[in-house]
Image 1 (cartoon, rainbow, N blue to C red):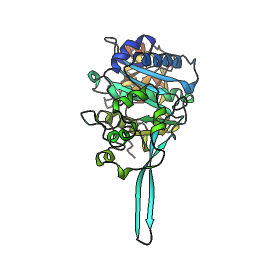
Image 2 (cartoon, rainbow, N blue to C red):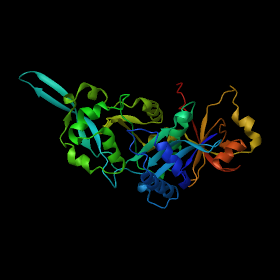
Image 3 (cartoon, rainbow, N blue to C red):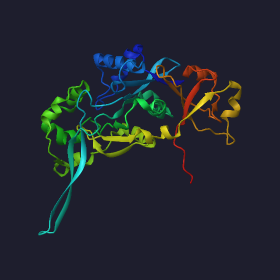
Image 4 (cartoon, rainbow, N blue to C red):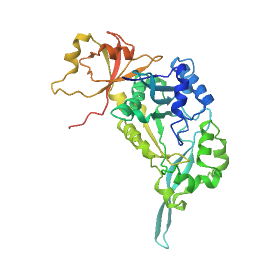
Length: 351
């Protein structure tokens, strides 16, 4: 079975192996053992609550309990841009008009921005190809929302997620080739690697502060602004299901969209509920609605230090939920303990 859990110090080697398969474009998950080790130490301290909330980096791994293999990873950063610059392009509009010539034009522009500094960030989502089936991707991605719903006081009002931008099959980034290369004079992967290890001062040093007219870019660069990498499209849809949306901010290197939301407006904040684990004998009554079909439920414990979450067919009834012993073991819970639940998929509005 699969369980999403708080990362542990013993996961470093497996995490490094997973990072080698990610590829370019995800700066928060690079196969650098020192960087991975440093980040893991911060993650462990985050769950132990020994560092300030804004400095925390909660990393979660999906473990296949049948073989002990790590199947995926995801993370939540408490706040971005407080210790190092956090840049994005904000898509804007400039209007030019001439009454004499009766000409009126609207021009899309890109502004170098630090507007999203201080936001909580969802990042580092990666699911191993061997596990890209069924509801595994949803379980991994949406686990973070249940964690936020359980501990909302630890996060800022605004939540963001930088999506990997579009790349051709060869790995070429049309946006970077059409814009960034002119200023950075280096390969996309090199720039990507520099930002991954926190070297971002060159961005402010080399990028123009003036608005950039989108119309000046090559056509293939214009077409991919706000477009996600092919393999990232499912992840974007999942985040949008949970209440996140695109509001005109993109990555400065590959123009991938930055989704955002107010934490208070997330589906998990609105719809997740607490339930007490009931006796195992209540399993049949609590988990089998008249239709014979159940909506898969995300179920997590409420333990910060040892946060764990699974996908279950159990359904909460009147504030109680009957989890099989095997699922209780995965959550490290017992009868009488409290868990948080949320339907895997948003409920359809039939009204």
